[in-house]
Image (cartoon, rainbow, N blue to C red; front, side, top):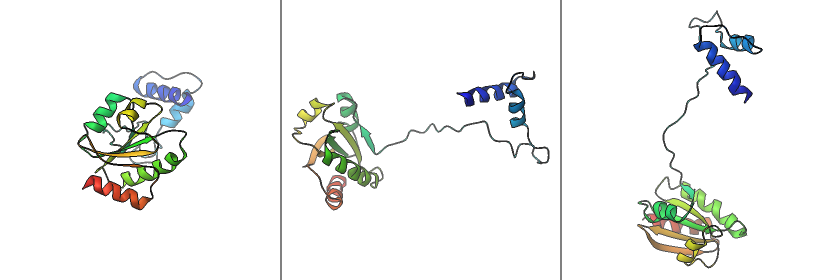
Length: 166
């Protein structure tokens, strides 16, 4: 908050021709002055601008928010989707989830991963006949093409992902 206030005062002093008065005015004006020995006059002054990227990031793993979100991001997806049905209280889920996320990230967008908490989305768990967690589905073009229940090692997960991608 204090940094924003200082930044506003600094910017206001740059924009308005009148001198700034107040406790922070000498500090702000000193911070904005360029050293006289530099040829460009601005080379030693820290930038007051912040760069903001407007491109949309494409995450490989995402949490499902509700039924329509599942329909939009999983069933209607052109990219194959690995759906991880898990629960916060599930120990094996805490082991499998990060392992699966890492392998999905290695696929560089050929497959994405949706995480569904069964306690929050019991309707989806019932619809896809999830009777135990972790349950992982492979969905391609809206259809379940493969499924496993329980924990798998990395080699077995790689085989599972390759079948989905090919």
